Length: 432
Image 1 (cartoon, rainbow, N blue to C red):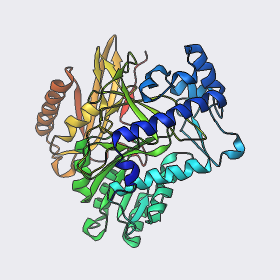
Image 2: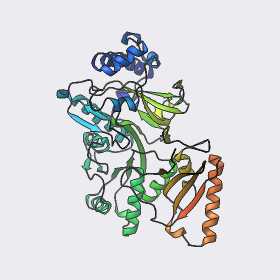
Image 3: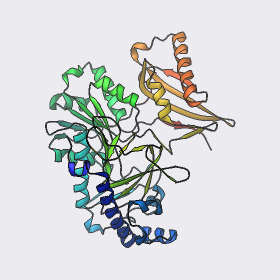
Image 4: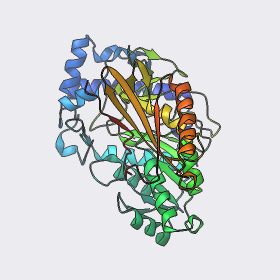
């Protein structure tokens, strides 16, 4: 189902005109109402009147996460606090959190955007949706909640944790749609298997997954274990939260709501704009947000944009499933290594569980990387010879992809710690 045909199927020339009109307005707004942007524009010698339309967007400076942190908590708000009706924030695990504010109009827009992405994933008013994201400052829980309510689904606001209780709710309430991180979905499948519950007894049919990068191989694992259609959706607190883009059932990328956001791809090193079809860092400009508008925000997420019309009928640009982040990139002996590259190799090896951890250390002046991965229970024979043969096989595959030697350690099932939220894949012990 297409939730809003007017905007999701808009002629691209008309869309460009709409974006231009909205861009001109938001640039003038942030210049008038956010001192940070006024100062930034003046430093760069930019007047709002220099921006006539989308074609001028590259004249505008980038906004970085550091700028958001430096203006903690409300320095980038464009509306007074009596117009802000809700606050959300990032976890702040690497410093001050990023605080974002929403007006009532922003919340209405957010719900509309979520309604679009869940509809394109196949969710309808007949569905019972279990949301296993935290209902707190994190945007995941509340973000999905109001859009799903708008579609008319029955919502179970289960939040995170207590996995066995989550499964009980699925059975008793007839859950048909799971909302969670992909890694938590895999963990839940394990618990279900251990509990001896027949998955056929559950009514689950769709998964809406986000909040962490995940590979196509992991999608296949989830679909095989749950017997559902696993879809990806994308968002980030700095832009609006979940709802920036989502997959339709053609699975040719995630449709971006371009009437609300201008997406760009840039070279992460030079900042130079790249064209459609080229891989680089995603950048977003919000066009309609009142409380917390953002100009050319560098997401650090790596993707590709496409602008050809999708077979589903939507004309909006699509982004490739995010496979990593520029700040996830590890430099090992001078080689750029992304966790997503390692995950893709592991998921192709039969007998491995989709649970792994990457440990980076330094001995002397030499970086070392070890990949610990769990075996499937039925494949774990305990035979040293079998383990060694499989470790060598994986090591060879990783060497081919990464061009460096990687130690591989197969571990028993249930050895690696599980997560009910975002999985921690990399442990970097280097003292640099």
